[in-house]
Length: 358
Image (cartoon, rainbow, N blue to C red; front, side, top):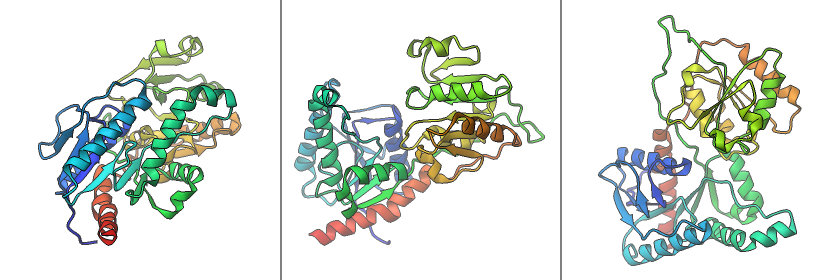
């Protein structure tokens, strides 16, 4: 669609690579700049050196706790700032937070799901009610012309929770990956892999460390699992004292060249960036079918239902390790691809809808 785009205003509380969602915003906006779009940010604070072409609009920083009150305050300040500064301008507002003055929102997930027990719901009612209200505003506000989600799993979740979304434009916008040279290649093109299995994830419960341990124990031959993310202080003794588990703690970069298979049996993961990172370095992946990055259709990846019998998981891992160790890296979707999708498809459609509303 050939159309001149106005400035794109992204809303994010923390602008920098300080979390999964924040890294998404950072990488997307920097790629949009490379593709000659004018990008501006409304935020509380910035981290790291950003492109000088990006214009920053700061609002007052709210007290971080409780989070729902802090988000509500941020939302109010952003709405006020937009009303005071952009009413007479042609702009597109793209939010990544629980805003209510945006034209595009990217929902990074997971959504708020009502408690199944009355007592738990009663104890948390004020907080959950506030988050639900802000979440509903973000998705269903009249100004929101385009809802973006990071995976099909998340899209289906939202449609189940908010049937009204069927009347809005809801599309998939997978996170990208950086194309990096692979390390550890010998001259003959093969890899000297020192360790077989790796688990990555600070949120170890949701990402399935218990199941990963059982899968490891089910192998006929004793193997080790290196766990990156949580520290020993974060984990129960059953992991710390396990003879086949090594707690590696948090690392800025993962030494993928040392490993053959990533084990990532998450119970539910909106996307699962670690899967895309592993495949970009040619590491084979055993994961759950409830991980959004399975959408991309990677090779050397097997996805199993989280509640499948343990035997199925063990069998799948044995199938992966029976394959050749000559790595075939896959980078199926980059940040540049994501930015192009926004520039050429999402933003022009939203601008056209806004013009038609006038």
